[in-house]
Image (cartoon, rainbow, N blue to C red; front, side, top):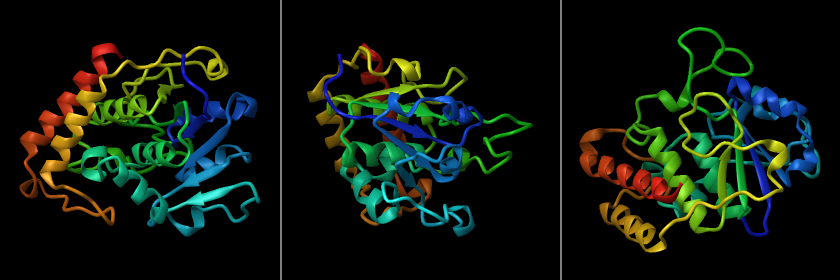
Length: 241
């Protein structure tokens, strides 16, 4: 059983994010929207967006209980957990690491973050958008591995990552029902020594991202070692996941 702590709903902009419109606020302790997902429901608590998120897409009115989180907050948070090269530089993962650092939840439940895009038709709940996680980026070559890394690091902190989507997904998290999150959610069993050793292997490569920026150039990194590390995160995840 998971321990005491907040249940955090993280809403991305995938087409199935519209399901969240019908969910009761009482099922969650905090609703975190990514980029345009604040448009889905007015009772969001936190909105996370990068510095290049267009001004016209940001909410004009923010209530007193609501907070907008930008790079000055989420870059240090993601760096606490290894930085963008290792953690994956797309907002679903960045928001997850920010929540781990800032909220320390017991459950992070994702919707609209599947990162699987159709060749035709709507790619986002608002229509057709840019598939950010599919851009040519050295940190996003294996989205499944990056999701495994997030789940494992969250588990080491007493948090369970679940996917509220029933669609094809790049996230390896187990699926769950939004109205059942206050019940018993089985934790992911992880070996803390394995996690510590793998984090040390990452750190030894020296690919830190103090300001959140990095060279998106394969020649600047040992891509074979990065792929090996990705595989190890997946292996830890699948041991008892």
